[in-house]
Length: 349
Image 1 (cartoon, rainbow, N blue to C red):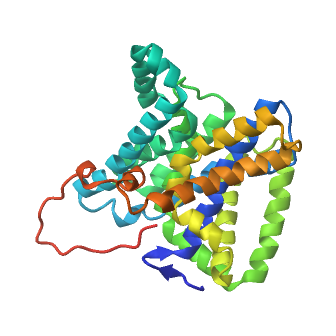
Image 2: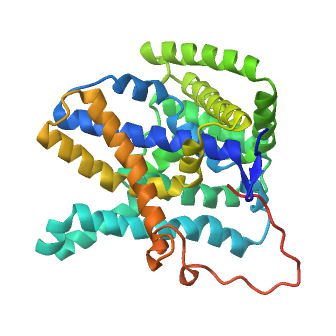
């Protein structure tokens, strides 16, 4: 595979993460703009096509490297996997709440604090994924000694039951756990299978492309006939879509194409934390002016702004103190206890 490992990164993972983050930004951009102008465009079917696998692939890829650290030092794990995401959630929740609830802050500071505190328990908007990652990492640590097959069977059954509509706790955190944790856990538990799958895909490009076309046709049919959300089907299509995204990433890495997509994947956390702000600005600007009449084109512009603006902003501040927006400063890290055991370096992505 061309450039498989560079600077302690695996290229196909970055490509896949790039696809994932663009699909997430696309959903918020397209649906949000459509609601503003009360119309749909040619990008809406693209969003619908990605619905069965948009979050499953994101969560599955997030769990791929977990085995490197979960059986290690507990303090280090807690710092890198839980405190890490808690820091970014709190920081960006404060930023978003201040920007979007500025009038409340000025007129009723107590209500502003209540809104902020409520979001700690009931995450909303775009930051819920960061919140859930911290929860998923904590839960996976708690069950790390339970046989992986047993945990996977239980959470897979939980996802199937959730798809029936029987489970609805009324709390978004537990509902999302029931719906998405199986994919995150699968990324952790079956990471060797995912990496071997990517390796084989890269070696057999023609067969892989044929399989991807077949998957795309089946996925489109399932979505167009509203089958994708049914019990079992939602689970199977989630894994099938995640496999497809891994396959596309492996092929792009092999042929060394789409470097911009790989770059977006490398800095997917930057995009995820920031996109909501420039996206909202672009949505309101286009909706209020009507300068772009085609809803699909306007949605695409919003998507482009949502992806590119965070990357440009990150590039501009990466050598300034403001980089703390994306890189956790030392004061926000748990100090590691001194150990005589040599450090082991793992590839992380």
